[in-house]
Image 1 (cartoon, rainbow, N blue to C red):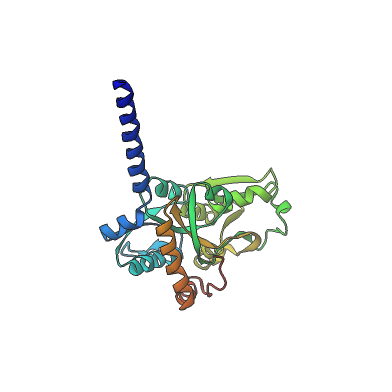
Image 2: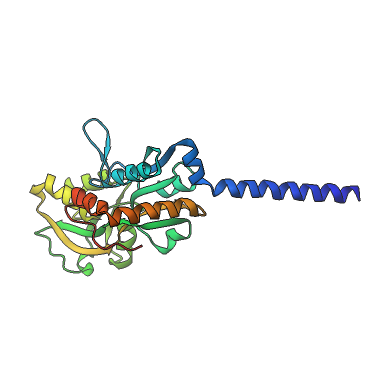
Amino acid sequence: MKYSKRQFASILAAAALFSVGAAHAQNALDNVLKAKTIKIAVPTDYPPYGSVDKTMTPQGLDVEMAQLIASKLGVKVELVPVTSANRIPYLQTRKADLVISTLGKNAEREKVIDFSAAYAPFFQAVYASKNLAIKSFADMGGKSVAVTRGAMEDQELAKVAPSNVDYKRFEDNNATIAAFVAGQTQTIATSAAVAGDMMQKNPQLGAEYKLLLKDSPCFIGIAKGEDALKTKVNDIIAGAKKDGTLDAMAKKWLGRPAGDLPV
């Protein structure tokens, strides 16, 4: 009987610890408000969504959105630089409370993280020289393409391109762009915003839009179970959409308003 009581006590203790752990895992908003600081993962290699200026200060649409979220919460923002490959792991390991990094929503990602309503437009496409005839994905057969490993365009291109496409995958967007600009690949798969910046800086390339990969608005990534934080973020997005802030931010950084975005 004494053993059974001890066993029962152990079970109760374990259950209590589990409950405390579960509660701790679901109180990100309370922790943010208590610390008066929110850690938000942002890109610093993906203009105009995220980059650094001459003083190494982060700037861009995603950075501005992070600052807006913090301002509306009444807390300071700690910007955490991430890449396409590590942004979701940073969220899962609590190195960031939110991910605002040109994050597209898909079924696979929804298995491991939650998403806010969309806050900005975004689409991916294939670009190449005007002298290169590409009118369909079949035309990419045998051609080389620069793409950022793990990015949305990497995943989407694999779905539609011929099996004999020569992929040249790089760890970040700067390396991807540099490879195409240096002539290491014939084509590049990237976002319209990044391509626009690249073409403006390198007019000698004669690069142009070729094929649409995916129209994929940007969403904010939130850890699973953080419903209170998700609700608060969605309220902030809804307010910014209603008062024209989202349109103004998109126009400033992308040259066009945000327009209709999915919730």
